[in-house]
Image 1 (cartoon, rainbow, N blue to C red):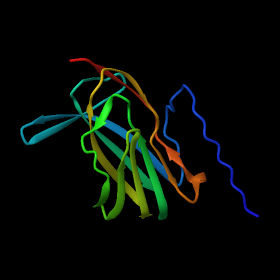
Image 2 (cartoon, rainbow, N blue to C red):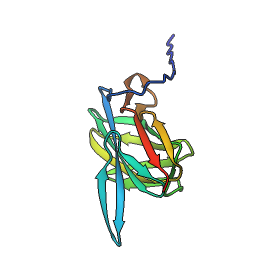
Image 3 (cartoon, rainbow, N blue to C red):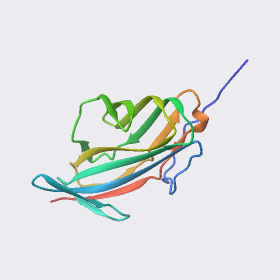
Image 4 (cartoon, one colour):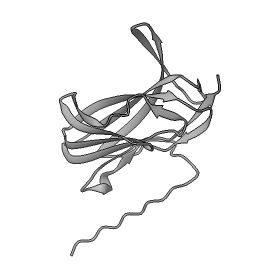
Length: 162
């Protein structure tokens, strides 16, 4: 007989550091300033302030020490941000194929096969509401081996009204 137990819980405190061994995930936010066809990315550090209407690029860096199958990467979204694209679809890039699912609560990436290596996934958000928003950590785990889950640090985003 084989049994597995999983315990899900939440706390008021966001994780301050990334955690993972077989898998690792980190998340970075950038303010995207467009000038015609050109766009520049400005990293958002701790305490950075956004404004309603700003465009934000999220970059998720994923590292796999070994090839894996059926992997789920979940990135929760701050309540005051909305996705620029709301279309869920299959994507091909970086020598990978994955399904990117856009939901109200965040963005999910599903990989049937994830080779060993480091990958960066990007998507854009638009700031819709002013306030202070806590964003939980991005998490990654093999669906059939949840004990190898990894997560990024959490973040607090401040948004000022225009």
